[in-house]
Image (cartoon, rainbow, N blue to C red; front, side, top):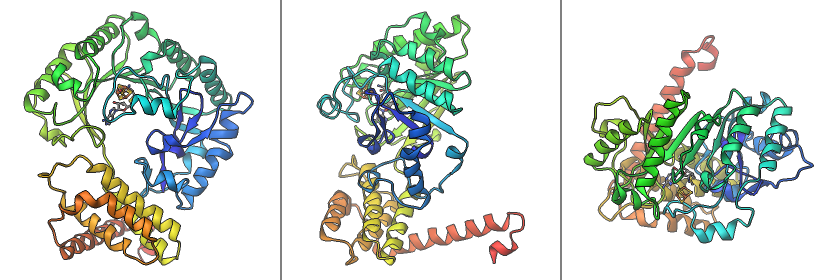
Length: 431
Ligand SMILES: C[S@@+](CC[C@H](N)C(=O)[O-])C[C@H]1O[C@@H](n2cnc3c(N)ncnc32)[C@H](O)[C@@H]1O
Ligand code: SF4
């Protein structure tokens, strides 16, 4: 078992450290305290140490939260190297929890107010304290990423923070992801930023504002273009990325071609299409082959923010094993995780959409296992309730589902045996 909190750190605008930025963001791991060393006592001390210890043992650190968290990697092996080498993969910084837009997949204004009191903007002194503690402790920080759950450009000190990050960690990748509703100034490209990500989901006001509610396409595109041209004019080696989350409203052939044309005009280095399960109805474009080609120098990439199939499969196995050991809490947390991930992934299916066969098989497995008498009625009801809307989409039979699962397991055994056999001195291991 592994998770982002083994290798990465999420600093909230109020100065606290939260357990990464999916469901884990509900869990505060450390409230800012100027007398505490954030590196020795927190990230490489007892606070994160306890999380790592549990992951290493194959237990969820916070079952009530982990069971709904997309970065919980149920099927991965714990990597002890991050703590041993005092390394942070991503130091995510939330310059502000405020935002002027209201994207449907993000926090609502009411949630921002209810869950987070002031200060809404990260204070410079607090940020500096974290940087200094990490630096003094000899920590390697690979990426310092300004985003979080609000809009970074709302914090008027954000560019100073970028410069501070760069001066403390000259070799780090210093990145920012913004909704691009800012005003370009040439000092921004001289701040020390190494990567700028512009989150603009559409090619005109109509395709854009369905997700980026209350936003202006013109404003966002102009900022991106001015920034990219400014970076070139100043001779700065800054990677510029147009991040384009795909939805039904912005994924037609015309939209995808126009995005490439506009990306070329703006001078961005990369156009990154993203699949998401948050917010609006999902797109039907899943791979680079689905993107019509437009001849330009812009690199096109595709990434996904979707629950991982293998983690779901693995957590069902973990639940089964926990039942075998009469560990009801472990079984319940793992089965809830698998059911929550499927519910979240397919929350936006319409009545005519089909559920992919492999997920149908997983739904059968979860329902089958949830009938075990060790589960209490409440857990069973929560699982059934979560999967309710998918029951009418089970087109394959229970037998076909079982056959699929047996086939995957057999393939997995063959894959592992081949992997073991290809390792040096593998004779004993295979035996
Ligand atoms: C909450 S935003 C904060 C940063 C900035 N305000 C922005 O919108 O990019 C953090 C990340 O969530 C991403 N995001 C926003 N809506 C999303 C969605 N529906 N699905 C997946 N990611 C989303 C953004 O692109 C950004 O990378
Ligand atoms: S612009 Fe970013 S922070 Fe603002 S609502 Fe949209 S996703 Fe959330």
